[in-house]
Image 1 (cartoon, helix red, strand yellow):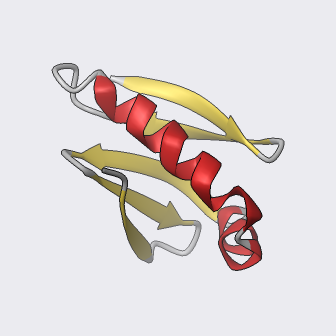
Image 2 (spheres, rainbow, N blue to C red):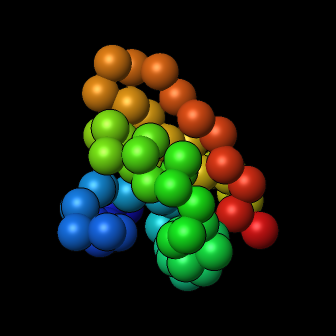
Image 3 (cartoon, one colour):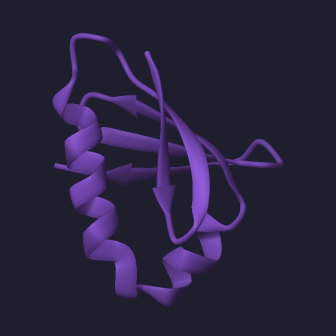
Length: 72
C-alpha cells in the first residue's frame, strides 16, 4: 500500500505492506523524535520516497542512494 506523509511541509510517498498498518504510526513517532535534528531535516529535503520493511524505514534519495532508519 502507499500513503503520503507530510513532514516539515514536504510530502513524501510511503510504501508499506498492507499487513503492517502500525508501520506508518511508528514512522510518524520517529519523525516526531527527529524534528529538532537539523542534520536529518537537511537530509529530508532530498528524500524521494520511503519504503517500510518491518521496523526499518528505507529513505530513498533522488539520486538513488538509500538511508536506513530504525523506527521501533
